[in-house]
Amino acid sequence: MMRCAILDDYQGVALSLADWSAVEARSYRERFASIGELAEAIGDCEIVVAMRERTPFPAELFERLPALRLLITSGMRNASIDLKAAAAHGVTVCGTGSSATPPAELTWALILGLARGLLPETAAMRSDGPWQQTVGLDLNGAVLGLLGVGKIGSQVACVGRAFGMDVVGWSPNLTAERAEAAGVRLAPSKEALLREADVVSLHLVVGEGTRGLLGAAELALMRPTAYLVNTSRSALVDQDALVEALRAGTIAGAGLDVFDEEPLPPGHPFRTLPTVLATPHLGYVTLGNYRTYFGEAVADIDAFLAGAPVRVLAGPKELP
Image (cartoon, rainbow, N blue to C red; front, side, top):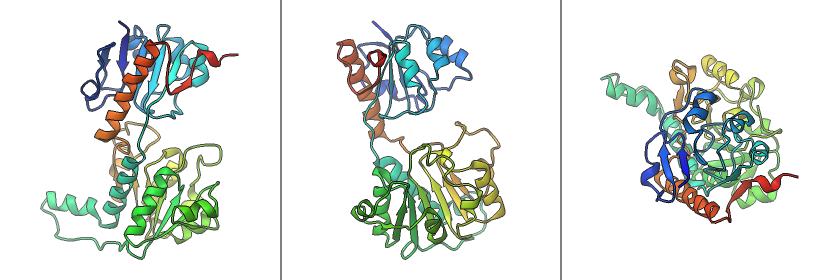
């Protein structure tokens, strides 16, 4: 029976959400401090299941895992896995399904929390502090600016319209036809969207044209009463510039679910700034998504063991 390591099972639920009886499965709830420590722990495993991008798989790691034959990632995209290195080391990489609904829902939790001052108000309630401190933002009639109107952005737009918001969108590849289909007004430029929006929400993948999309100059275009929400990828925003904008009060606040380093180090400004509403990368963390991830991971294993892998992202056959 092959050995299978399930990484970064923070909540300790992986083994209960699928039938792992075809393999000798073991779950790791804590992150490993180094590649060496990780390789030592799972070096005997032929199969590894990775949760999203919590643990990177660079070429160096594949070199230290000679027993590895199958690597499964939740979702069908994982930028932290070196797919060429996997193929070069004879490792098949497979993915799973993933729903766009959970991150869209969390986006709205952050928007609503910022708009109605839930962070200071709930803290005051718990500490017997002042009764009412903030004046909320009316979403009805406000402008929701979406940087990215794909699967997730379209769902966010739908809710924005239900609240009576004026939804405007922009991305490097967004056309007027696609914007209209999503019920979104196309902004003439990124800069125009930033100047106009009361809430700016990011829903883009990181690539050559989007990395560092928002820097100090772009954040300076936002209104001092506007909020920035990022449930997509931290690399879309210059993190130091965002900290400075929040400290200076050039924007009203930020709702953040993604960070350059995860878990976020103790004492980091995003843990302590009073205008930041932060969650520990919970965008995809729902029971339904986890059942899909682990259920389809088991299906990937069964297919691999039967000699017919499914949902293949990379594999030895891709080598020239």
